Image (cartoon, rainbow, N blue to C red):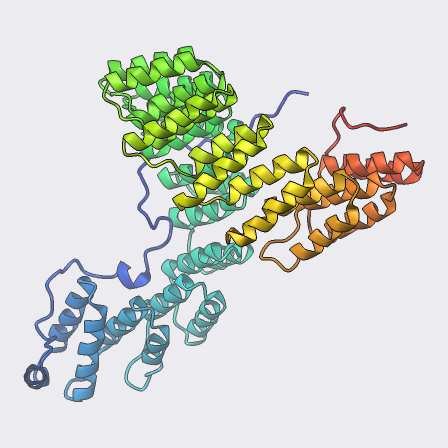
Length: 592
């Protein structure tokens, strides 16, 4: 059966993609949306006591329009505290009757200062003024910003009871608030109420909802909402496509990413680097380099000028799939358009050479970087340490550590961790411990290094040394992690010491972390190894009750355990559950 290709709804427009601002699609706080562009500061706010007396005299005959302008000028300069101080002085003077505009400025300032209680107190002074839709929008926006969605909803209901008609800003503010709080169902409910009130959702409405759906990977509903956008005549903008690209990249859905690119290209929409880079990065991450190159070439044909970051993305993509030849060709193309490769460009190629154990080529590349006067980064040296460690050239690893320090670069956790990792993989656990001791004086986090060595001893069935290091962690004030406990539990279960493994599992319960599927799989293996598959089944049920999703290893272990005991009925039941969870693979041993 051919794989179904995801296609986004086609929307006919040539609107340009633009980089969204930092708050988009968040509706700008209503308190800022209505401000004038005036930037002059108020002449009324004076700090000294004598000036305050002078100010009070000035207030007596001051027109309301001038007072309002003064408040507005302070707000335009983000002087919210000064605005409230001036408002209080005017209020206390009792010489001027303040209008709705002035009260709204006070409410607005209180919200900006995150003093919602004061803002609400101003609203309740109804004997002096009557709040309007602007007032409620400001306060609702402040409550949404604080994620007080229950209070925001109550304020909206109060607004309706006061017979103050909400506007599109009110609905968009609530929708954004509910999306940020993760209550998408409520957000969509507000959207429907918005339509019932006669307001047509705008691009901001759709983008807010799309962003919320993309964050939780509800892709089917995303496509439905895109179709609705089309029906209302809206064109996806930069923010829309960025949300889609981010979601598809997170899911590893290259077909979805290609659909986004097809929609962008077919509509002739202008693309900037902000949109292009994550799009190409997602496609390259999935190894689809031909498609990535085609998209880039088509965009360039439409006038798009690639940046160094774009080329670095393509170079890294080729290196990921092991195509160094095309990676180097891309670097040459990059230089032909006047862009010089940087350390990040060469690091991708260097990493590929080291993974392929081509250390001679790696050294030649380092030499070329030096000739180009491109300074090697800590990441460059860490890559070399990993490459030489993989080749068991440990003396060269230590030489690189010295070179780093000579050039003023401090080796970090990855530098030493990489070397310790290869010591452990090659069974050189004593050398790993010696290096760990040396790291202790350098104030570098060591928990991962301890974990590597403890795991190495557990795999070698040397639990005495594993627990010695475990105790040493406490002495050195290095706090064990779940990874530490999982290694020890697995090591104990491998040698049949299930009772002590159980004790460690129980001890985890009181920690800041909880047992995960690896913990339970190790204990399951231990139970089945000692012929107690029934106890393993009880643990399996406990896993599910704690919403820990079983893996293929979970089923494989239990099926093997019950098979050894001749319990065909339980084997069939587990096998059926495994298939229902879509975890079947031919490699899983089924005994019948």
